Amino acid sequence: MELKVDLDKCTGCGTCVFACPFGAIEIVDGKAKVYDSCVDCGACVDQCPEGALFIGVRIAGEVRVQDYRNVWVFAEQRDGVLTRVSHQLLGKARQLADTLGAEAHAVLLGHNVEPLAQELIADGADMVYVADDPLLKHYRTDLYSKVLSDLIQSKKPEIVLFGATTVGRDLAPRISQRIYTGLTADCTGLDIDESERLLLQTRPAFGGNIMATIICPRHRPQMSTVRPGVMAAPQPDKNRQGSVEHVPVTLGDEDMNVKILEVVKEARRRVNLEDAKIIVSGGRGLGSPEGFKVIEQLAEALGGEVGSSRAAVDAGWIDHDYQVGQTGKTVRPDLYVACGISGAIQHQAGMKEAKFIVAINKDPGAPIFQVADVGIVGDLYKVIPEIVKQLKAVGAGSKI
Ligand SMILES: Cc1cc2nc3c(=O)[nH]c(=O)nc-3n(C[C@H](O)[C@H](O)[C@H](O)COP(=O)(O)OP(=O)(O)OC[C@H]3O[C@@H](n4cnc5c(N)ncnc54)[C@H](O)[C@@H]3O)c2cc1C
Image (cartoon, rainbow, N blue to C red; front, side, top):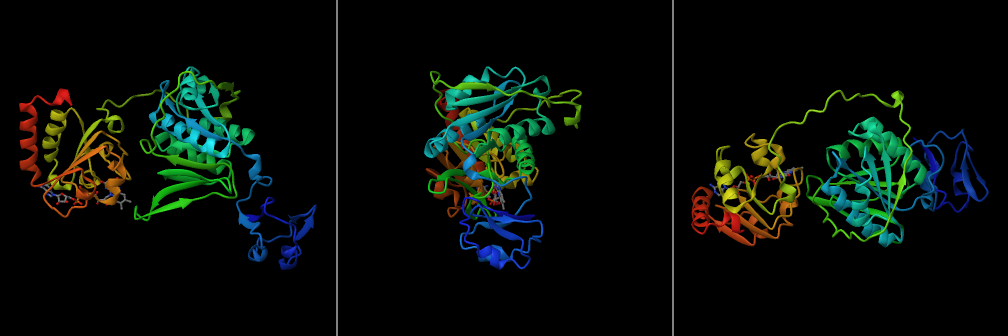
């Protein structure tokens, strides 16, 4: 850590010069200049009337926030297919860029991925940087971090957004550390403070009991991860025009700490809750793992997917892939049926955007009824079989 001067704020008033017990600061060309005799004691920091001095991370050169422009999205692709969150983030990047009077750019890393650039332009990108190289075919932390941080340092975006996927959660912190900037993980809201040109990054804090809005005023870019499903994907406009810039990739053995010998895909049922139109979720009220058989029956009768609360996951009744909520998936189905789920705030964080919510719970005071459109007070083991019977009687599943 070392004493830093925010050159945008410094007025050269000289208060710091008098405050410094070591004579380590002078005013040069109207701005405070810190010399090597500074011991980072911070005596000047409190005295500065403009808040222009701070003890920060040691970086090469001053950060001139005004040098940074445009909003970037790391466009994550897997096997040549863009992840859904990439589309969602581009929709948000477009809004943020419009508010800032800036451009929205996407960065695409991979091999033979250029055809995806047009999809990103249709989503709202003004420009797509494409880094295409056989070494980038599969995600590797070291290579992706190098290419992306080099590009960020050369092009200087003011905001960079990542999906909070397995890849994004691995890559974003690595980059923020390399380029000495902050990162706010798992944002649920992104907005702009237009007067200060700051990204307002909102996320749950203290176990979801408060929403904190975090800013990164002194470092650039401002970086956030956003979980899939939190932002709505834009309507693609296939006629939109944008440009593509190829990024030269110069990777050598010295950049590679990991070699991929083989890619083995785990054979398991893909849980696609984020895309599901209908979800039937079970919670601790099921009483045992067998309870999910009843949930599956209702999901099948409705033509939907199975979800769960965290309590059911923690009990080992179902895999974490099925968990809906703050630390699970964020879903936006047309119909969400919560069975034996109390409706804790952390569960609601993942499902309250559902268009229609049905809750089945034997406790009439359960918080889930406050967000439900239809509430059924009763024992799920009596209510669900009856609903399934009625649905089968009218042959509903395929018609919904
Ligand atoms: C940081 C943090 C992150 C979290 N993330 C998540 C998350 O992502 N997702 C999540 O779900 N939770 C999350 N939680 C946990 C959350 O706070 C709750 O503990 C959890 O959601 C409770 O799960 P539940 O509703 O299944 O269980 P309970 O709260 O125990 O509720 C069970 C409900 O079942 C009802 N019931 C019992 N028997 C029956 C029956 N036979 N028929 C009908 N109803 C019945 C009861 O009346 C009760 O309302 C998180 C907590 C923290 C602190």
